[in-house]
Length: 67
Image (cartoon, rainbow, N blue to C red; front, side, top):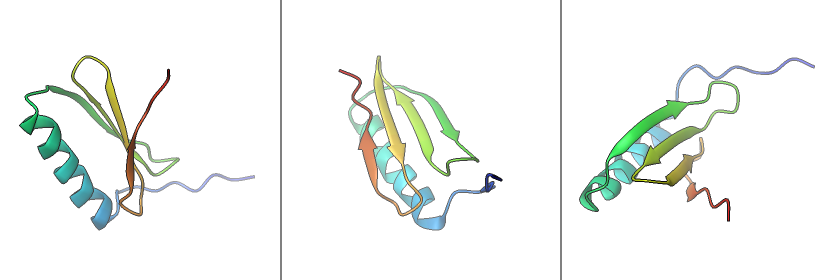
């Protein structure tokens, strides 16, 4: 089974990433990492001490809650 590689985020995903990063910075949190997963097609953001956010190709986003 071959995995499809996605080389770039979608336009709506990129705009959502910008909006989410703006919300994070408005809360005076540092953004430590923004990473695009080329295999799964999502954007991962690490901010503050432990805030983790995923942004999906359709523009939906959610916090990662590991508790």
